[in-house]
Image: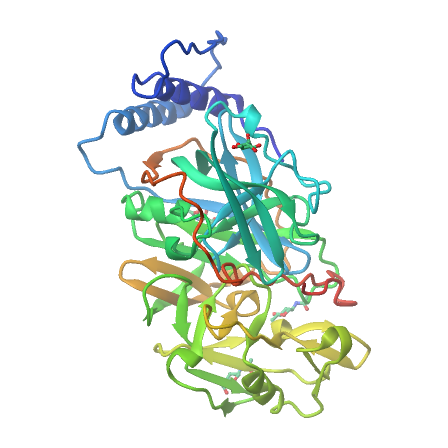
Length: 474
Ligand SMILES: *[C@@H]1O[C@H](CO)[C@@H](O)[C@H](O)[C@H]1NC(C)=O
Ligand SMILES: *[C@@H]1O[C@H](CO)[C@@H](O)[C@H](O)[C@H]1NC(C)=O
Ligand SMILES: *[C@@H]1O[C@H](CO)[C@@H](O)[C@H](O)[C@H]1NC(C)=O
Ligand SMILES: *[C@@H]1O[C@H](CO)[C@@H](O)[C@H](O)[C@H]1NC(C)=O
C-alpha cells in the first residue's frame, strides 16, 4: 500500500474540516484542532484539479442547484494467484487510507478488515477508524456470508474514494472477524458492486450512489480481466486489467457491446443462460428462472446445477466426477482442448478459451475442469458465471436500462494476458473530481435478515504454477 500523496491528503483534510464546520453538524462547544501546514508545491495541473474539486465540494455542501458534474474514472486491477481473484483500490477516511479490495459484482456490501481484527487478517493491511476524523460509528452489527467464508463486524460511515470519485457518508462495515482464507494479503476487504436490495448492511453501494446521483457520463461500469492461468511463470500478483466507471474503454474491445436486458430487477446482476455448447454440441438447458446466472466478478469459476454440469462433462470423453476434496468438480484428459460457448439470449455466443476451462493439471494426464456443481438455494440464481468466463470478454454492467453486455476483447486487451505489465498498487489515484452524497438512511436500523447467499463470491485459490488446487472452497 502506498501512502496517498500529501497534496491529496491535504485537500481532503480541508474538505472534511469545512464539512464538519457546518453549523448543523458541529455539536456546540466542539473545536477542531487546526494545524497549519506549509503549502505544498503544486503544479498548474494540480491547482486545476484542486480548484475543480474545491468547487464541487462546496456545491455539494451547500446544495448544488446544478446537476452533479458527470465524469468517468478507472481503476487498474491486480490479478491474484493465477486468476483466482481481481482486486482494485479505494481510499477511506480523512486523511485517506488506501486499501486493496476484491471487486465483486456478486454482492453489495463494502467491508474492510479493521485494526481490531484478530482472525483471518494476518498480514492484511487494516483500516483504523480512530485515525479517520470523518469516521462515524453506526453502532450496528454486520455480518455477511459468501460462498468462500464470512465476515462480521460493525457498520460505520466515512468518505470513500475510488477512481477519482468520492462518496461522503458511505456506509460500510469494519470487520474484526473474517474467515481464514477469505482475504489474502494485500487484500483488505471487498467492494460489492451488486444492488442495494441485497446489501446485508441495507446501505446503498458506492457504485449505485454514484450512478443514481448522475455522477457518471454513462450509466455503466465495465471490466477487462487478464488471464495468467496458463502461464507457468506467472507471479502471485500480476496486472489484472481494469475496471471503469461511467464509460466503456473503446481501446479494450472491438465491435458492438451485445447488451442483454436483465430478466428481473436488480439484486444480483442476472442474465438467463440460454445456451451452452461443448465441443460444438448443445447442452439442453431449462428456461425461466432455472437458467438464471449471476454474472459475478468475485467468483473464480463457473458453478451450476449438478445435472447440467454433468451434461457438460458428458461431452468430454474420459471425464470423471471428482471425489474427496474434488467432490462437485470433474477431471478430464489434459490432451483434450475443451471448447465451451455460453450465450445469454443476446445476438451472439461467447467462447471460453480451453486455457480457462483447464483449471489446473492434477497429474501429467489428468486435468481439473473449471465448471463445478453448485446448489445455490432459492435466494440466488442457479448459475454463477465467474472469471473463467469473464476473462474471455469485455463485460459491461448497465444501470439504465438494466442490462449486462459483452463485447469481443481487442488485440490490445488480449495483449495484456500473460504480459509483463507492472502490477498497480493501492493508491487513491487522481484527486476527487466528482463527489456524491449517500442518501441518508435510518442509520440505526438493524441489517436486514439475509439468506446465507447474500454474497456469491466463491474464490478458489489456483496455484500460480498450475501444479495443484491450492485452496479448498469453504
Ligand atoms: C462502535 O461502537 C460500538 C458500541 O456501540 C463499539 O463496540 C465499537 O467498538 C465501535 N467501533 C468503532 C470502530 O469505534
Ligand atoms: C494461454 O492461452 C491463450 C488462449 O488460448 C493463448 O493465446 C496463450 O498463448 C496461452 N499462453 C501461454 C503462456 O501458454
Ligand atoms: C483504456 O485502455 C487503454 C489500454 O489499456 C489505456 O491505455 C487507457 O488509459 C484506458 N483509458 C482510460 C480512459 O482509462
Ligand atoms: C468453439 O466452438 C464454437 C461453436 O461450435 C465455434 O464457433 C468456435 O470456433 C470454437 N472455438 C475454438 C477456439 O475452437
